[in-house]
Structure formats: C-alpha cells, structure tokens
Amino acid sequence: MIPLMKNTFYKEEDVKKNLSKFILEAPILSMNSKCSEFEKSFANYQQTPFAILFNSGGSANLAILQALKNLGKLKDGAKIGFSSLTWSTNVMPIIQMGFEPVPIDVNINTLNVMSSSLKERIKDVKIDAFFATNVLGFLGDLNNIRDLCSENDILFIEDNCESLGASLPEGKSGNFGIASSFSFYVAHHMSTIEGGIVCSNDPELVEMLKIVRSNGWDRNLTEKQKKKWHSKYNIDNFFSKYSFYDLGFNLRPTEITGFIGIQQLKYLDEIIEIRKTNYEYLNHTIINNPDLYEIDHSHMSRLSPFAIPIICKTKEKRDKYIARFLEMGIEIRPIIAGNMQNQPFYKKYVSNYYNLSSTDLIASQGFYFGNYPEMTEEELNLCAKCLKK
Image (cartoon, rainbow, N blue to C red):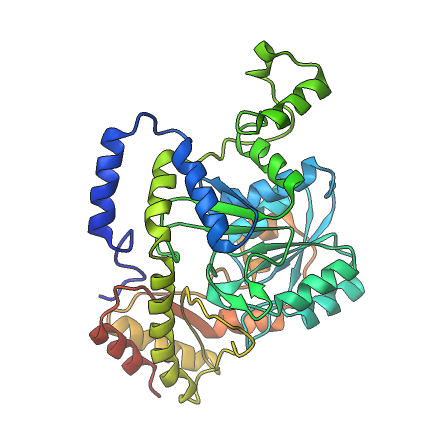
C-alpha cells in the first residue's frame, strides 16, 4: 500500500533519538524556552517579525479571530469571506465567534480564490474580512487580493496550513495579510505531531494573540506589556498572577512541540524540494492526459505541493481513476472538504447559500493522493502508471 504519509517526521530515527534524550534531560516540558526558540527560528525562516506557537493549526485560526474580536477589529455579526474549498478549522471559528461566513468560489485552474472572484463577491456582499486558504501548496494571486482588500477596508488573513514554503514573485505565502496560520500536523510539510503557528507583522495583534493563547492572562508578555495591563486595571503584582484581561483559551504548545519544530525546521527546504520534484515528475503524466485538468501555477515562483491533486474532466472519469488507484493500493482522499456549504455542521448553523460552481466541480470530479519525501521511485512510477489515460 502507498499511504498518504509514511513517517511522523522527516529523518525519523534521528529525530526520535534526539527527542528521547531531550525529554530525559529537560527540566520542564510545559511551554518554555524551546517554544520561544522555535518561534524566533520560524519567524526568521518565514521572513516575518513575529511568530506565535500554538498547539495546532486549527487553534491558530481560532486565536486569530478571537484576537481580532478582542481588539475590536471584528465585531459580532461581521461578515467573513472564506475560500469555499477549505478545511473545517478555517470556517468553524467564524461561526463560533458569532460572525457570518461568506464563501468565495475558487478557480478551477488554480484551486484557489483569485482576486477576480473576490471582486465579484464584494459587489453584492460587504465583507469585513477575507480568510483565504492557500490550497494544497498552490496559491491564488495573493498580491492582488491583498491590494483589493486594502482598497475596500477588508482585513486579509491567510490560512497557510497547507502551503508552507510556497511563494509568488511578490513574496512568501503567509506574508500578505495581517496574520497567517501554519500547521505542523503529521503529513504536513513539517511535523511536530500536533502544532501550529501564527505569523504577523502587527505588534498589537501579536500581544493579544499571546493573551488569547493563555486563558486571557499576561504570563507570556514582556515586562513592559505586563505593566501596561496592570496599570490599566489597577492590579498589583500579587493579583496579577491570576488576572485575566480578555477572552482566551488554553491553546499552548509544549516544549516537545518546540524541540521537534527546531529539529524539523532545518530540513524544511529539503523536504519541500523533494515534494516539488515528486509533483513535477507526476505532473508530466497529468498534463499529457486529456482526461485530467492541468493546475496552473505559472504565476508562482516556488511550488510547495502538499499532495497530488487530480481533477478529472467528468465524474465518470474520476470514478475510473479512483477505482484504479484503490486497486493498486494507493490511499486517496477527497479534495479537502469540498464545497463547505454541503458539510453537516455548516447546514446546521448557516442559512445563506451561494452558487460555487468551480468548487462543486472540484469536489465531484477530484481526489488527491500523498506526496512525501520518503516516496520511492517504484511508488512514483506506480502512481504515474495509474494516471495514464
């Protein structure tokens, strides 16, 4: 069988040995210095001023919206646009925060929302924020989306959980909005087992994210920031230990997350290049098969494939290729959650329904299979064989 992923970590044996030694010797395993070290290293890699570590990418999304609400940048009932082809943890926090979700259709050629689709939606619906999902290592025209959001007073947020390392000529994905989320769940570009991070260049938002991450208290703020909150509410040093300044959750990572993150980050570029090479090898077969759509990434300066997405020209052809992959023992999945409006939780809480023709086509005519550094030449050849007409 060819699974979606083989190992928990890249260079797994070495990482597990190092992790075992760290656990035995570490004086503390709750969030501490290793988490801070990883935050600084990741911010440096991402070329952004700030990175805040969380216990998952889903928590990162939740924290971003809670922090923006705490700061008054988003209010109850705000309309939040989102990429219609996405994961549940991009949309559930919108509902949980008391906002109204507004789906934006993706482009079948890029799998992502393009500025043209966003422009069409905001002609009819005034949205307060757009939470884009960068899908499976591919990107929309984020630079144009950023400019469109700026012109229309729309907060732009990126869910970059599936596209770590991807970039446009104008910059890295995750650096175009007020904040972006990343996931380090198993099978993502780099794994810390569970884990996520938020990047931002907004100091006020970063401060609030740290408050949101830790139950609403100030424990992880700088001394200067702590004094500001103590003074604002006239709280002395004794009561400050258990004072809570705004709404939050316990979304903290552990030192294990930080340690593994440091270990894996040094391999990240190598991991991405192998995934890219795998994709390019298989894409040669895809573009020569008239049964399949070609995904356009010509506008990207660096591709960072999360998986190998396949979009067939008809449902019948999709069924044929799915049967072929399953017969060969190759694990497959739908193209993430398809049209989010069709998910049970969405129907329960949201009444407005929008036409999303491209997303519907991708959902009904697409699937994906795994792409990871440990794939062998034999496995790649078998996948290519399954993709031939």
